[in-house]
Image (cartoon, rainbow, N blue to C red; front, side, top):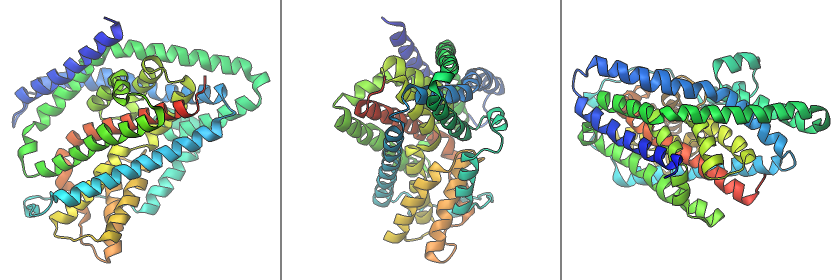
Length: 412
């Protein structure tokens, strides 16, 4: 058996074992020693090593991708953003259909929950934040802060100019290709720790949260979100992949399983990026140019799972507070949830803050504060668990996009 296949089995077993161990350890007073051990091995060491590679890998992979094929850059970028926007909108529509059919918030006991006050951010604030990230004032500060979006923009700018002055820049281009090769070797070394890291991350999450939350009053809401993610990730994205590639999408999912399981364990698209690029280029044989451009951008702006989750959450809260939403409000939710998911990068508690933007948009449409902003606190307790699944769909959407674009316009 190939080492890659063995490692995939080890990671899967670690996933199952982490859930079982966490369920066994879950209690009102979880063991502190176990929590601290899981934190050290899973977050401090494994997740820390992955995060260490994110920014250098983003910068180098984007520059290598652009300098490898500057001629098709415009078309590749256009296809990438058409795909991102379309799939996120589809995800939101799926979420809205399910939440209006299932009605998980009807009769929900909102009086039993005391929600914390949250800072209100307007849609204008989200847009300004996005622009502020796109045009970095100090690229070295952004590099040290670990913000991927400004690094991507700078790397695109830098890579285009390297391509224009290719003759005089050949040594620099060669250096970045060598750096990319070394960084991918580093990713492979870090992935040796993947089974242990994912075991600890899952064990900690389930130890703290438990599995009984599915049977509690928020269970129907969680079921709605999870069902929507399964439909989008398990049916819609594979169908789109098959239409454009005429290849078995589930075989492709098996090829990139390490990235999907890592996303599930880490709940971070950015932290999963090194694994996504490694799986895409080494296992799925997607060109390094396509993977180097599509995946870094996707990990920052393509959030299918997050967009679906926010749409479901806002309608759930509306139902819980007895608010009837019409077609206009659902349309507003669809648009703002899609845009807010894109603009979430770099904002503390991004999912909650962007959800507040969607709530505010609905309130403005209805002309009154019918959904309290602080109502977001109702779903805080189960957010961490759902984050695992929506991140997995986010990463899967990035990988499907890279596969489709690589098929439509293959670049060596």
